[in-house]
Image (cartoon, rainbow, N blue to C red; front, side):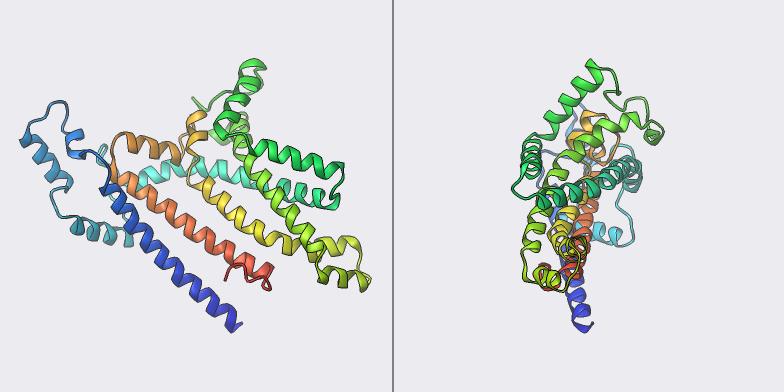
Length: 317
């Protein structure tokens, strides 16, 4: 127990350092963006006095370290700043985009885990046979298709040619859950590649676990094949899959920009695109910090799950 506590403490310290590094990196990268936000906001053909007034109003005339210190103090109090274009708090933009993105991510993960694990276990049980070759070939082929190409293909077939599903989410606003047909194509696109990668990881892990000495010992003790597969081999096969699942959830929560843009879904990815186009630096910074924090937290959770599932492997150490 003491070893587990010290491991968790080390991971928490590492997570805090990673979070600090994310904050500093986000500020440095936004400072390095080309162009001048004051010139963009001053209008067409602005005079120098107008630009100077805008810079002063935006705080851009102050040294970078002062702005960084003020921004960090705000973050510690849950204040992500104020939008330069609308004057709204950045937290309002996050709240607007978080709902649609969370809905898409939740539905995708809800389908991803049973499908990915089920396909991986099925392929491992029939290793080298037709079922295994079929699943392996299909997952490899689907994984090779980019999200944008797959999305366009699904829209062309199921929306435009067959007319079964709406091509975009335009007109549904925040009521996506009340119109499940508008979610089918985006979820399929989001699900395609993660299912393939998760299934292949589970398959490889199951084959390795079933060939390990501890599963052979379990069979010698007279345990049934089902208990050996699902009680002993599967937990160890899921250890690397937990890391992949955390990366997938992080990818989903951070807003899949291509999918949201293709299906016109007002999620975090759309908010980020609009903020970049408008040079709304506080919104870009706030979103980048949230994305970075999500990555740190999800990886910490995945490391803990991996450590508990397969402590012998020390994968997360």
